[in-house]
Amino acid sequence: MSAGTTPLALVYDFDGTLAGGNMQEYEFVPAIGMAKEEFWREVEELSTRHDADGILMYMMHMLDRAKTANVSVRRDDFVRFGRSVELFPGVERWFDRIAVYAAEHNVALEHYIVSSGIREMIEGTAIGDKFTRIYASSFVYDQNGVARWPALAVNYTTKTQFLFRINKGTLAVSDSEMINRYVPDAERPVPFSNIVFIGDGPTDVPCFRLMREKGGHAIAVYRPGTPDARRVADELLRDGRIDSIAPADYRDGEPLDEIVKRIVDAIAARAELARVVEASNKTPNGRQK
Image (cartoon, rainbow, N blue to C red; front, side, top):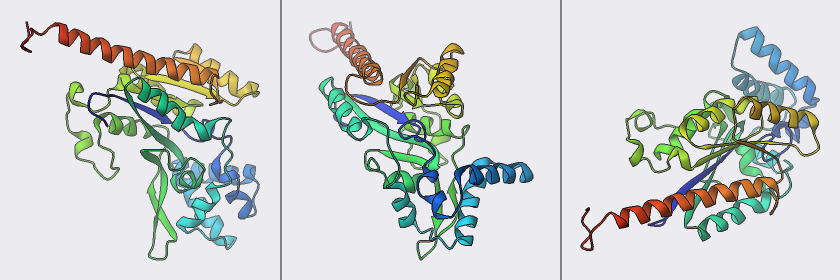
């Protein structure tokens, strides 16, 4: 981050936020010979039977079903599966375009993913290289590159820890010491007021709530032309869970684009005001009055 610039983190859910549907449904689920409804029904049955976390159960079920269907589950395979994921309008150009706008306002913008989806699939999409960090469910791979065990399972409640990691600048998932160490708000690299979380539904509520409580920004997007998705977003707004809603359309001039740009403007203006006030409170020789 350049000296004298103001930090801003845009944090995104993935499924339903940047892309329609669940990423597993595009190529992986058909490859193992299942319909998406069947796959998720079996995951739900496993979760209920074992009283288990749904994310861990879907990850286990992916490996079990792939083995039965003789489908390769190397890291490169998951990356390849991700290439088929269809992104919402304007997403591919969004990250560079909004970063340029931020830089013009002396704001240093970084993009992050916090998702219950598969990290390696996200890395395989057309936007996989746009993020400072991708926090998503992932696997441990053996010496042959074959997925053997979950390395990280991100569910709706654990999502919030990654907002704290961004806030504190403690980005490594394996770091369990620094993330729990007390750091005064003024010394944290990215204030919560300079974090925007963009999600699409109830599984993002803990992150939405944290943003609202900490003075950040919470935006719910919905698939354009889908009344049920719009209804969910309206309910989140009505219940005070979020600050604003917008169609999941990332093109220039669309409502989401305008909302984020106005947030950039406000953060830049707030930082400039702080600089002006600090300068005015000093004597000509640089001492505080």
